[in-house]
Image: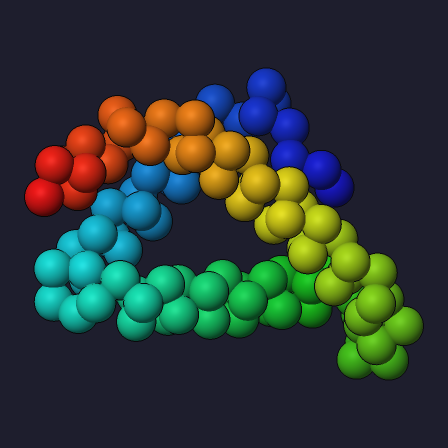
Length: 100
C-alpha cells in the first residue's frame, strides 16, 4: 500500500490542487483553521477509504490498528521529508517572511 510515485504521473497534480484550495481558504481565515480543516477532511476521507477495504464493520475493526499504523507512518514519513526540505531551504521558501 505504499505510495509509488513512479506508477502515478498525476499524483503531484492532485496534491497541488488540494494545496491550492487550502491557500484559497487561507485568504479568508487563518492558516491554523485551514490546517485543522485539512487534517479533519483527510482523516475523514481515509476512514472512508479504509471502510472500502472491508466487507463489514467487524472486519474493519479487526484491521483498525493496522490501518492507523499505516496512515500514521505514511504521514510521518511525508511530514518529515517536507519539514527537512523547509529547514534546508527556509531562506528561499520564506524569504519574504525573513525580511519582514
